[in-house]
Amino acid sequence: MSNVRHLPEWIGSSPDAAVRPRVRLRVFDRYRGRCQCGCNRLIRPGEAWDCEDTIAIINGGERREGNLKPWLAEHHPKKTKQDVAEKSRVYRKRARHVGIKKPRTITAWRKFDGTIVRASRER
Image (cartoon, rainbow, N blue to C red; front, side, top):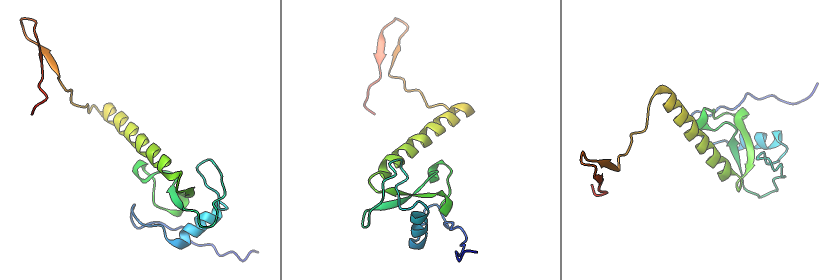
């Protein structure tokens, strides 16, 4: 029988809740101090790293310990950019599926005599 004390999973009180230091340590230990972005590099002492949500909050993820992974701070912006792009893609597809369309911008039209009238950019 091991002497390991099992703790309940930490769940943030809100999506913006800061990850507590003890939870950061547990996440770091769970992944043996390696960056989970794909490089699998060992995070050295003093090196900046973040607890990144595996499934981003904007894409339906939750702020809980099971959804966190250690990422080097330099790799974090790349994932954030990908998460925002995915959210935009999903929104566009959902909006199109439900019939919501972006309003069409008319820049030019034809008069009955055939002449083309261009819309002025001044408003």
